[in-house]
Length: 198
Image (cartoon, rainbow, N blue to C red; front, side):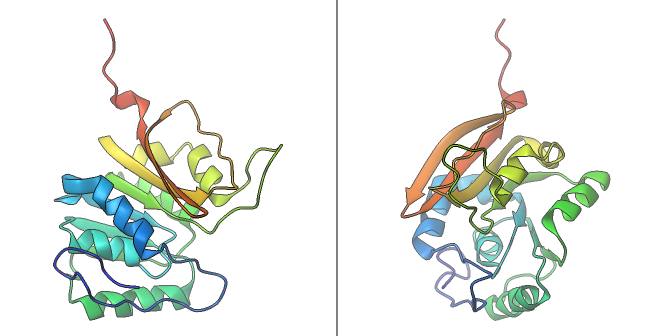
């Protein structure tokens, strides 16, 4: 795995071993960042379920003003720190929280934090034909606090398995979908950002 573009483009990253982490493949990340375009320049980014830290570090490499990564596993968090050091990217613009994502969301809301871009590619959920999804991706969509962290024109990019059929609450508006193998990435905006018809 490597940083694809920006100032650290081409540098290799360490990836945690084992089945408890599923790094977002290079091709999927490339498609995400091609779609984001100039949106990253100067953006405040929240990277949830960070794993190896590849997505957050890619954002920093491409000009994000600040990146906050949240990863629960201490072993993976240690690897994120190693990857940050290996890229030579600014440590002042990068914050790592070693905690549960849903705990972090509550604390960030309480602290009044706001982000222009929220990225999340959680561990995949089970196939859920005929029943509502119980995956981590669905839990994020259902979390009433998450929208409070997104700036008015902000974007939420959410990954999930193709076999995991999500129910998208009415407050979210889907603006793009990327598909690659079993991976899907949904680009969502809050409906509050839409102009009111008069």
